[in-house]
Length: 87
Image 1 (cartoon, rainbow, N blue to C red):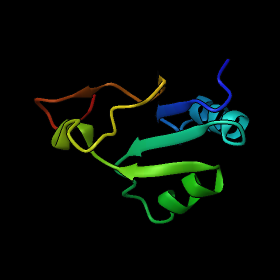
Image 2 (image 1 turned 135 degrees about the vertical axis):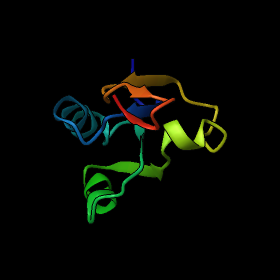
Image 3 (image 1 turned 90 degrees about the horizontal axis):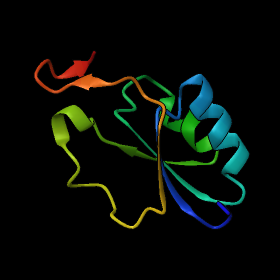
């Protein structure tokens, strides 16, 4: 069902997101969306088979995201747009 799908994965660095990325990276195109602000976080995502896209959704919005995802999986913390950070 998911094979050859393009998946947007929020929270791919968290416990469940990492497991999902590892499981499906070989058969799907996984895009991770995160600020990737910690040193090495982008490289860690790539090592999991994730295509990292450095976006802070609270600050940057959705304009830079591709629009052709088959699935969106959200395992990230919710954010409070008025506070500009994760809530």
